Each structure stands twice: as structure tokens, then as C-alpha cells.
Length: 221
Ligand code: 5RP
Image 1 (cartoon, protein in one colour):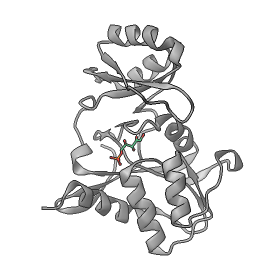
Image 2 (cartoon, rainbow, N blue to C red):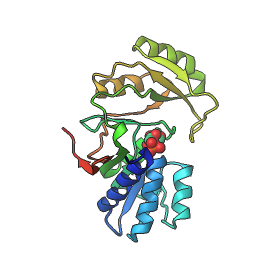
Image 3 (cartoon, helix red, strand yellow):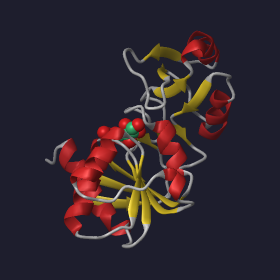
């Protein structure tokens, strides 16, 4: 039986097939993405450059000598590759377990195609078992948390964690996510919320899933 890490690697290696040479791509953050960067380097495919979403991803790009390009230098990307904490059958996701969902949403928004890479434990029929990360302006944290309680959630401050953009994260447990697009908008409308980890508007176009039966390429239902 393949381990979770082996399933992540399987998805990461398969996703390299979606990369076209000589183009700009966007790259998310996390352990699955790190395996993708490694697989891309080993494939020998040469891209023009990659927009990174975090310090960790930039370090991986440098280690594998993949050129990094800044978001402000490009107007569009052919591809965005990223992991997820949960992904449903419409390929809507919860992201932000690593606290990078703000940068990830920004970079994904200029890509033609979003390829999500994950092991099969992340593929769920309903989002919400994984607590939803909400990035907040520190002075608004308590007020935002009260509003999140009113939405039915149980907010918990991510202790000792500051995002790349200097904000805090509140992880919201027990949300009833029946309408992901509506909830994404509702949470983002609360003053003091910078961005939440629901990727419902910007769902993935393709999911490459590492499973015990091999890598599967899944499109939205
Ligand atoms: C970071 C993310 C990651 O994509 C998500 O946490 C999945 O990480 P991993 O590939 O390590 O399981 O959203 O903000």
C-alpha cells in the first residue's frame, strides 16, 4: 500500500504533463507542490519562469534552478499548480493549511488553467471537515471571530503564526459549507477579513489525484 507521501509524489509527477515549455506558470505552496517542483526539474522541461506564492516555494525554485518571475512582471500565466487541504467533486477547495492562500488566490487568478494536485485523502464529497483558514487584520480579529460564530463556525486563532503579508489566521471549525461560492463571498465581506481559504469562485479546472490505483486525472462534475 502506497503511503500518503508516495500518493502526493504520484500526483506531482503526473501534473508535469500539463506544463508546456517556454511559458510562465504559477506555483502554490506545500509539500505536494515541493514534490511537483522536484519532478518538473527532473523532467528537463524548461519554462520561462514561475511566479511563487511563498518563501518556501521560492527556495525550492532556487534549489532546482527554475527561474522565478515576480507577479508584477507578468499579466497572465498558462498554468497554475497547487495542492489543497480538501477538494470536492466540483473541484472547489479549502486551502490555506500552510497559510499561503492569499498569495495563492492572487496568483491563481491570472492563470488560464488551475491544476490541483493531491493525494486521495483530500478528495471529499463535501467541504468543511478541514477548518477553513481566514486571514485577518490583527486589530479586527475578535470582531471577525464573532461574525464567524454568527455564521455557525468555531473560530480558533492560529497561535504564533503571521502570514507573509503580516496578518493573522483564524481557523474556522464546524462550518456548514453547503454553498461554497456564497460562503466565500459572505466571509470576505466582513471588514477586517483579508481573504479566506475557500476557492469556490476560482475552483480548479483539473484535479490530479494520487490513488492506490495510480494517478487519476479528474475534471469537475
Ligand atoms: C498552503 C495550501 C496547501 O496547498 C495545502 O495546505 C496543502 O498542502 P500539502 O500539499 O502540504 O498537503 O493551501 O496554503
